[in-house]
Image (cartoon, rainbow, N blue to C red):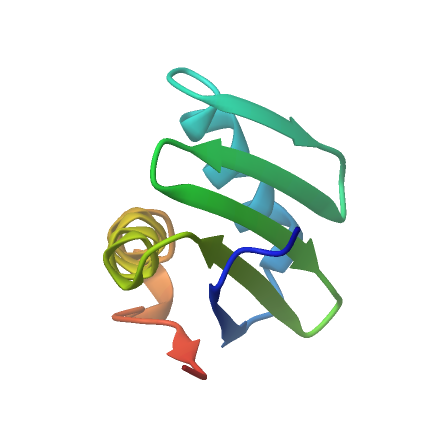
Length: 97
């Protein structure tokens, strides 16, 4: 069954593969994460994130049982990317929801 809440974020960058790797390796210290060079999944207590890296952008699909779970997912992704992508002056993904 699909979670009732979802959102998708996009970040146009040529470094999508690098950021996917950094996010997944970092999250793997505390939660279940599976990833390779172009895709990853992270199982947070508040929801799931599916990450996809292309040559031009990083895409994150969030699912959660509550709207609050989506909000927490956005904050988790954005705050970590702000650290990892500081050279690109990253502030937030382009969230669609």
